[in-house]
Image (cartoon, rainbow, N blue to C red; front, side, top):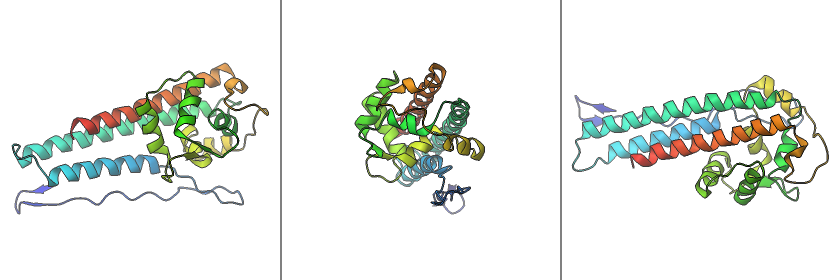
Length: 220
């Protein structure tokens, strides 16, 4: 933020990742990353805003440049917050389908019980669900949910992708067992209405990441 009296620059430190809001009662005491993805996106926006303010274009006044980037930052947060709210609602809707469980959903993407999903696995699994993302869309999803930065999405990261952060619904879904012993990439284990909701969720996740990327690229 520009201080007009001293012509110096003040910046806020990036938001730190939040600690888990609750811990399961399992023996492994697995932590839930409730809002880490949202915080990561906010940090990206903060870094972009600071970088642009610190190195303004030569032909643009500092004040005008700062206002433009502040507007971009606000738009980024607005899109992010709206999208996250809608995604959470759709995850809750998916959780209310009694046949939905994470294990069967994970098998749509995973092969050979490896315990993780590659970028190619994600693309092929989405195709099975009749979701047809571009290569960039798949890459955006991988970047968002691959929190360990290993180039794959593990089981726990996939959990955050498809089930709500709301504790009540999260526990409800995690207590469910697989419907059947089915082959990989076979969504038929779910009812048609469940498949449709799962498909809508992935379409919304893709659209969210696409919009956020376009906002950032428009002001680089």
